Length: 248
Ligand SMILES: Nc1ncnc2c1ncn2[C@@H]1O[C@H](COP(=O)(O)OP(=O)(O)O)[C@@H](O)[C@H]1O
Ligand SMILES: O=C(O)[C@H](O)[C@@H](O)[C@H](O)[C@H](O)COP(=O)(O)O
Image (cartoon, rainbow, N blue to C red; front, side):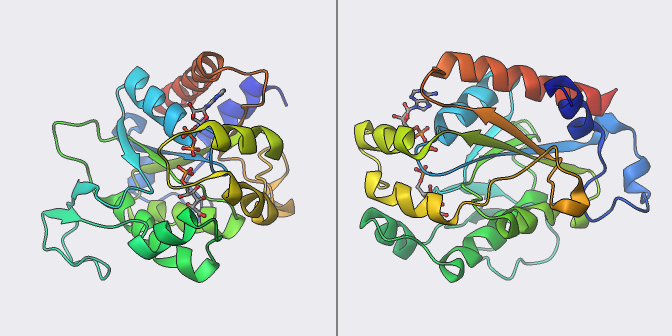
């Protein structure tokens, strides 16, 4: 399958969990869809850099998935069980302070540490950003394991107009160790990189689903020979293509 064909399939597929029977929401005109792009991969792969550029280029709303102070205008009608603030404005810590402190010490998070963070991200997929911002989101989130990505896919089961897609930024461990080493002023240092590769479950978009394939993931090479500008150009082009195909 060529890159173009893979991306075509990415744009046209039904949301996961709802592929057999299209609901009324599924039959809505495609231009009513909201898109959520998760920019994923191990620490220092370029999630923040690429997600910000993608948001800027395509006028999407940028959300830092690790940001413990992100404000979100929530349009859900029921109180979210994880929220401590009343609607309509939520101040939600995605990664609790304890997680950030742990990672700052170079200690890998456990599944249990990540559970609340992933759940919060999944629940907030259905919250619309303020009307002054684009309803389409770009969210950074490492999403290292298949199970984590599956949690993030759940949002589309609760809001049929959502199209949730992933961009996985792929580079060898030694490249990311070097980028983490050179990065200044970030809590995640190079001593976190190896543990992230140890648990990483690489998505395989071209494998059939019954063999564990994840066709809603766009894999982008961000290795040594690919500079930021080149990666941004590729990501913007492919995302624009998928959103356009999904809107026809
Ligand atoms: N394609 C790239 N080539 C070279 N350096 C990059 C590239 N993408 C990101 N960087 C740099 O690598 C570091 C990590 O990027 P960052 O966006 O903070 O990653 P993440 O959010 O995944 O941890 C930053 O210093 C950034 O400027
Ligand atoms: O699941 C995790 O272990 C974290 O989410 C981790 O993957 C993330 O990478 C850190 O929060 C560092 O932040 P950056 O990814 O922005 O470096």
